[in-house]
Amino acid sequence: MNTEPFVSFNNIAKRWNGQLGVENISIDIPEGAFVALLGPSGCGKSTTLRLLAGLENPDTGQITIEGTDVTEMAPSARNLSMVFQSYALFPHLSVAENVMFGMKVRKVPKDERLAKLANALKITGLTGYEERKPGELSGGQRQRVALARAIVAGQPLCLMDEPLSNLDAKLRHSVRKDIKKLQKELGMTVVYVTHDQTEAMSMADIIVLMKDGHIMQTGSPQQLYSEPKNTFAAEFIGAPPMALIEGGVIQGTESTSQVGIRTEHIQLVESGQGRLSCTVSESEYLGEETHVLLDHPRAKGLVVKLHGYNSLQEGTTVDISFEDSALHFFDGNGNRMN
Ligand code: ADP
Ligand code: MG
Image (tube, rainbow, N blue to C red):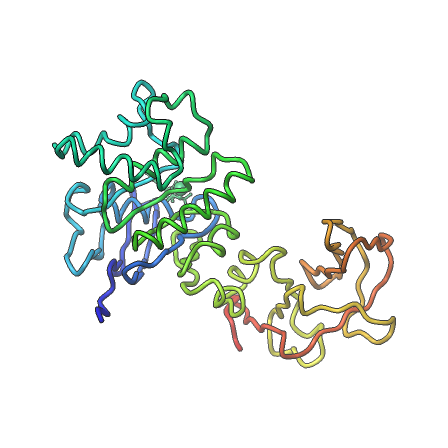
């Protein structure tokens, strides 16, 4: 088995006129993996992707693809395809012409072009749309044309920068599944930029969580959810985010700065039987459950999930309880202690 990473970032840094883009970026990506670069706007996701594509050059560090140092190589020499948020389709060309554009430039023979086109349109559910112009397609269909174009490129590595953010919620959900299925079927290695933790959690094998140009945690979705390395990861991953309680508020946690707990580990208990007394600030009815948001002067993000419809009066005092084993401990720098 090949244990060499397929893509490797080795201590990459990029600045513009001294202003930080990204720093200390080291990532190993196995062949066939789906990697999500996740984080808030401006944290350096696109910069990281553009460095891999060769659209930016790093100030320091190396990037390798299949063991070859590509740091100084032109984008066209890196054997990768890209899909952007803005589709980047030619409005005056048909779907077929858009998908085949790159192949035409590379002088791929016509028979081969048409065969690859038919296959890519079939995979993306666009058969029959060959002659349409982008203006005659929905957002989801346009994004699938961009995907089809990446597929016909036949490259082993595909980079995607927020490809679904122009789509409405329902479409986003279905195209998300299409992309994941395609990636598996074609055995592609995908590096996917998103600010949406749900998207990253549901699609990725590996999540690289970023903040202010730095990597905060790299790991599987389960690792980031159940063992956040810091309070940033604890609050960024999960809906609702992990609740954080000041150290010492819960007996026995005096040596910690903050204590984290996830909503599924919090129970409402009889008055006087709990470990923490809170007041109800809001109830959000979501259909199969109700999220009850709780206030405590030394905690944030406390939520209890109740089954079905459940309206607790705002201002009501409630007691909550939880097991010690469900607690996450963080130090004064916000780093995980347990
Ligand atoms: P993200 O994709 O996570 O929203 P970016 O990678 O686009 O973030 O940007 C990261 C940081 O680098 C931001 O502070 C941004 O302003 C800065 N940046 C990105 N591209 C350039 C550029 N060409 N010139 C100067 N600063 C840039
Ligand atoms: Mg971006």
